[in-house]
Amino acid sequence: MNQEMELLPIGEMAKLTGVSIQALRYYERKNIVKPAYTNPDSGYRYYTTDQIYLIQLVLNCVNLDIPLKELADVFNAEDTEGLRGFFERNKTIAEKKAKLINASIIGYNAVLERIGLAGHYELEEVHSRAYPEKNYYLKPHGQPRKSESRMKEFLEMAQEMHGENFNRITIDDNFDEVLGLPDIGIIARYSSSQVEYFVFGEVTSQMMTENCITLPAGEYFFRQDKVSKIEDAHEVFMEQLNGAENFWIIETEEPFLSRTKISRPMFELRLVVM
Image 1 (tube, rainbow, N blue to C red):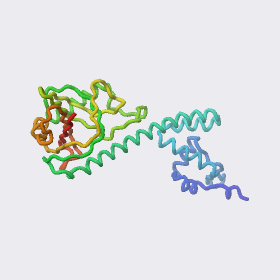
Image 2 (image 1 turned 90 degrees about the horizontal axis):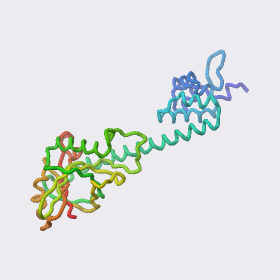
Image 3 (image 1 turned 120 degrees about the vertical axis):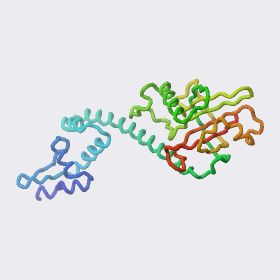
Image 4 (image 1 turned 180 degrees about the horizontal axis):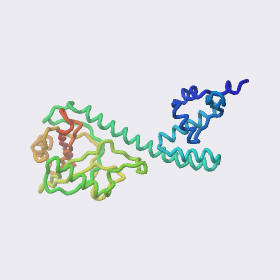
């Protein structure tokens, strides 16, 4: 039987693997995956079916941003232990990247949920809905601030919590617990004698410190407005408070609840009686 009849032409290999002919030739030039046979007269390249597995491994490395030279060195050395170490290291990288991708999906779902709520409730009217448990990092605040000042304070608070690299997510980070779309805003703690204000940012349970509080899951009253209403919260929830003196008011800024533009966030006021 003609040797070429037992092999896969480069075009067929490209179709089976989803890799372009140009990429297969590139892998050949880099000594990563060479054709099993090249016709000396025509220059046509042919591959064995076993090489499909090698090409799939190359694709995995490309998707994980693993330098192909590293893969070529391992393949060419033909060292089983070296190959084992290579795949053990990169299995760890793949697992961490999978967590990062999952964190992104959770974030997208959270944004879609917020967008779905936009327009679902009447503005400037009190409603109720179920909220999950929330962990908030608090920083004392003299008084409520304008929206742009709150974001500045939140960023400063985040730096206090995580250091200068708080906003640089890498595949080395721990994603065992992920916040899809963390709450940020202002909290007012009411008691019979005073009202205390805090700027806050939502954190995971792994990030809890002595400066954090946990608000339990439950059905809470809330109201959405185009402007901040935290200073008027006592009047807003007068009927729902029913004379209670000790309670929390949480006001979040919600760009994805906007009826117009995300540059014009909505404000959501929530009542939590502790």
